[in-house]
Amino acid sequence: MNSFMLPASLDTRAAPALHEALMGFDGQPLTLDGSQVESLGGQCLQILLAAHEVWAKHETPFAIENPSDAFAAQWSAFGAPLHQLSPQGDPQ
Image (cartoon, rainbow, N blue to C red; front, side, top):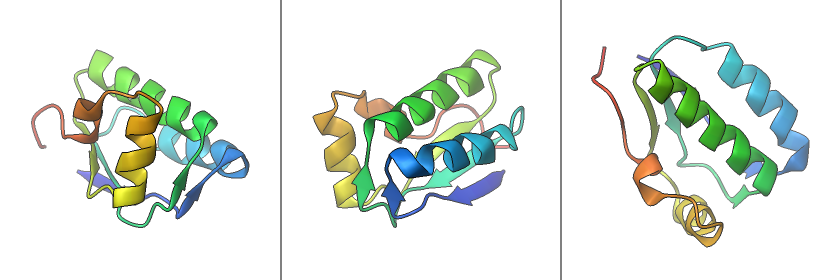
């Protein structure tokens, strides 16, 4: 499975680079490491949710693992489903 370390700041400025990075893994099993995330903005949240849906639609494993406390709190504050911070699919 491929892995990608999410940056500390997932704000509006980070959104284009995050989208581009995720699309580079399109169709491949992917684990995102959220351990370094200090801030999460709405655009990056939308990108992560959309990626989760795309990977699920294609039945490809996708996980956001090791979310920092700040990442988990901000994810939850947006009302995003907490189950999406857990692995889905079978590891390959």
